[in-house]
Image (cartoon, rainbow, N blue to C red):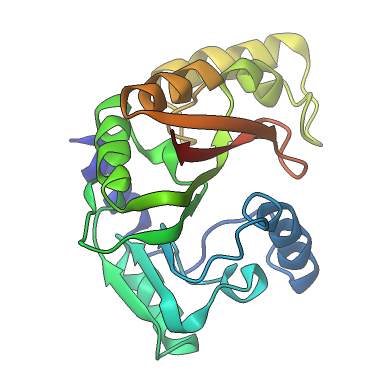
Length: 218
């Protein structure tokens, strides 16, 4: 089974994005962190990859008139469209999506973890074609490989484990990890450099085992 098929099957019947909390307070707080990543450009045209059921949409304050959301889960998009029936939403694979438009902001949150290296490379190639010189390409909440052991040990969560149990969880995750793929800064810098992009990194305040990448054309 391919990486794409695996995650399509996982999300097929889901109607919520499985955030840590499902409360207005959480969404407001998390959105405040994410908005810092693109606040300097006040984007008018937005492409969101992996928009899910739109749980974060209202709090991110995106321009409704110039917004397009993508997700490969029909059930998630159905829930999104019921809340916001006038938005442009499309069911497709975000890693290979490309259209003829250029966007001020191309945004994803917790999505790159579902892309293997081949998909990641294709994703950057497709996104570059949809950017203009002032565009921001924001990949938020990427699982941080350097913090992987600390995550499974509970050091960065509220589930502190003993060292042996944490080590076993870490080793098991190398062969099968429900989180998907973990990346380091250098992995993102390498593919960004290939497509002549510059990248700045920021640690997540809500998830200490994740980081954000803000990418621009050189």
